Image 1 (cartoon, one colour):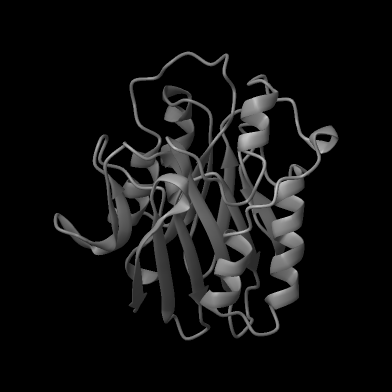
Image 2 (tube, rainbow, N blue to C red):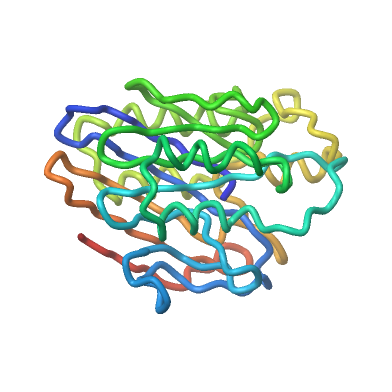
Length: 248
């Protein structure tokens, strides 16, 4: 998952509205959004290489999502970051208690950003900063640095989300997520991967032969606890593969 924009509004008729893209190599095997065979309470896509997830919902209003931290200098790690999402969705720990469980072992994973919560709280943790945040009401954006890092595509997606919050619906959120336009080179961040890669990754929706946006997800949570989660899947060069819509 490489881009998430969301509005967290406790007490609002729609306390959480979220739009997210998962960017990954197309040949990494994964299942689309659905209930997990070994944990039916988990509704998420699934990485078949390591068994984890990038975004999903669970019982009792549970939600979690993950992005990595872009840093070509970091060494390989044995554990998959996607298991952090899966653990919270499968488990019974409260959001605050999961933080206590996470902190002692966060260094066992390559750099990550984790969002997780329930009907009452939404937490954010960047493993490099190691300063967990209980989020207040607001509109936020997350890509592969930290919360609200002003990368052009993130600023653009956040602004677009604010424009549709008066009446959010999946179609409007997907319009944000499928924007292929790249910003000017002068505005791109320098994350150590070279200009060509920065250009490829600079658009909200990424499409190429081998790597790109694999899934677009739209989540709308209502005050009564009901949730709508829709996922669209994509293949090489942005070819549309299918859509799953779950209302729970």
